[in-house]
Image (cartoon, rainbow, N blue to C red):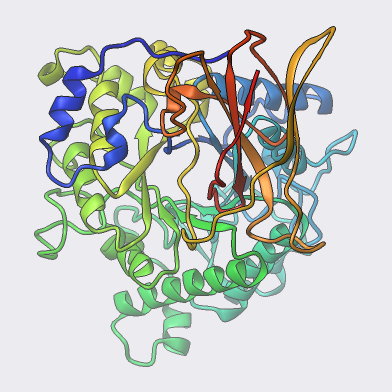
Length: 501
């Protein structure tokens, strides 16, 4: 059934038109294209290890259903929290966060990532495989198996603040991390590889990173901070090459801490005074975007709109202005957003203003909700607000790649009626080859128009389905018009094929 948003949009449209450099899609109450992601983390989530295989599968289905109901079109699912695997892997052990013990396989055996990809795609949602690159343990209490690389080659790691981490200085570590990503790409139909904000570890008071040995070995007289940044640069560049050489359509996304640098450290920085990616985590995120090594950035702007040290409204503008060609999706903290009043908007929470900011900025193409469990749990009505207002229409994820390439349309579109109802059916366009290709049809967009309604596929309210299937139920009212388009692996859309009922 088509969702028709009846909320008056006149005031929003007028206000938006007055803004310089406005994203044209912000003209709509809800844009046709928008990234609407949600992070689902496994680390620290005991509910996974307390469920049987069938219960865990049902839990994934429930979470995805609730996210879809809230208008989410991309799931960012954690598959490698601490150099372990929430999937079948010959390279790393099963995650303790899944089974309760590192290396313990699920029983009965199943592959959570494989299942989650299948369920996400069934719902027309993207699946972004979320990995933490360097973290090996999260606490000092964890014991690694005797055959773990840490016990065989301890020089490749260091301990810091109760954790064990890969030392970013070693090429062997960069190669291994890329091998893990290659394995995922070769065996799973992921839409993106997603790296979170943990590069060199967050600084702990009074503690220095114990990398003297590797600095002596590889530093070559370079200032240590520059050397550390270069080590991370090398990983990001190699990951980008690894991904694009295997599957050019798979996006590479980074979710950095929300401040690159403060203006007091660098005139190019933001009006903020918090911890800095560049100086504290040795992550030069802006360089990665400038060099084309990342496809999207999802900066974690988890603060309130006017937090003194890190005002999210100011930082959203900064990331928009410094994206360097990468798409930007703002990481939004659901709990803090719903807990914080917005006096300037006469609102008891900040959701309205934050969504409007994201739609006003031309280089910001969506939001990612941290965390997804607060959405599925409908924290203070967050899911209701998304479902009924801010994400009430179906949105296509942003397109990327060569926009001049347009996929072929569907074939043999027809309407069939049987005892179960009225259905649209069609055939997929011909594949270019037996191997996967960026122009493959992976999803279809179904539009529905009432008699006398303008047949405008740019109106998001006319979208009734975003689906991988070639048969969908539709309204059975005579005089209706339907259109079906193809989305390829880069979310590029074909010309519509129309049919009248």
